[in-house]
Image (cartoon, rainbow, N blue to C red; front, top):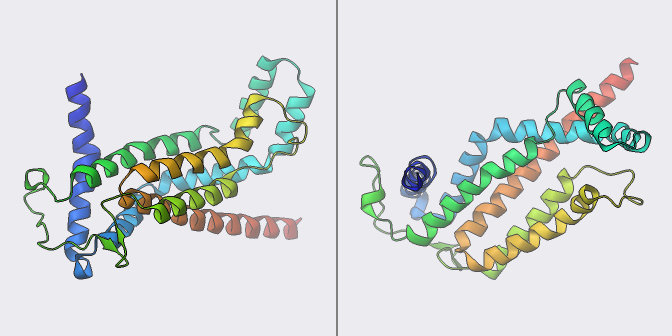
Length: 244
């Protein structure tokens, strides 16, 4: 069972990412590993676009229906009735409240695979490289000429944590009842934007800087994506208000 999972992990995540990184490095000017990581991040983000776009749209809708959520919480004391009413509300608006969790969950195998790529992949092992991929003879592992991507780096760990903070704050739906919120879900929602960046910073201090660079780039792309979706939603709402 474990051997099957390991083989599947290598075939689906580790080897494609390793070979993708090697290919990008081979065609990148000066075989720059740092810009190859950013290019690989953009490619991964593109492949995950349908999932991440749906997640962001769901977050936007959940922000809109927050007053209705508060009304359900205030009017229904029974937890089962609250849950049924909430699921009906989500169904009416065509949203899946767990889509964000699934999108985040999907990123972790990619992150683990990237950690393995940078931890054991440099220098690259020819036995793990596809036959049609050529390993560059000289790979530039110094990002911007100063940061070694094969060892932990304080600056990139901090940037990964900082970008994670802004990304979490941007995507977190406002809670109108936050002043009186005492339930576990509300408490976790308020603490997540602070806890996750701290965890990312600690992990960033343990992992090769290339992983922190990937996480920073992924967050920056996510922030830009969400800002674009939010701007589009505001335009749509403005057009709808003008019609009414």
